[in-house]
Length: 184
Ligand SMILES: Cc1ncc(COP(=O)(O)O)c(C=O)c1O
Image (cartoon, rainbow, N blue to C red; front, top):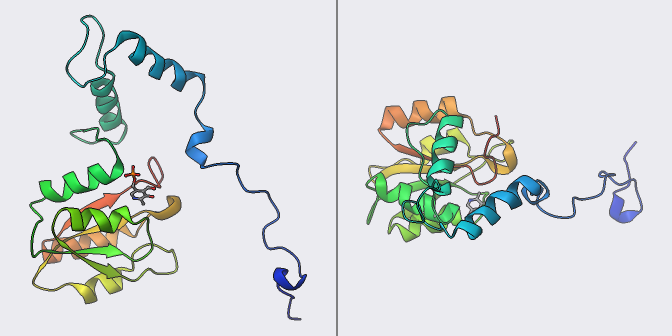
């Protein structure tokens, strides 16, 4: 039997209430307040410059973050957009280069490519709503230098296939993890 859509008075597909805000914000508690207030109290606002006998919170955070993710280095930036632009430039991507990017994401994934003076090339998503590896292969041209892939809403991209394609075509892969930090 065909069910009536909720909009026509049928049962609602979603029965639980929405969160009152973004999930990360709900995690802010006493521990986070203490860390922030400590920075303000000690007036140590920068990575390497501040009062003596107080460890740089930025450096401490970078080291802890890199260790948690098994990375050699960690570099804090002012925003994810800043991180994406820095990563693209660090990869040597610039004018005339094409960078593949997923069609479903926050606009910064694409805007950062424009800010790096490169050309965004939009790829389709598959049923996971992350970038479709089949479409990546179709969109590669001699001008393609890399890709910004996005683990949307905590769902990981197909990294095995993506890295195999990147290796085959010698492309840089930048992971936009704004929505999936710590996800597996
Ligand atoms: C997937 C994705 N990439 C990048 C960004 C940009 O983050 P920021 O606002 O820190 O620059 C966001 C922000 O929501 C995002 O969802």
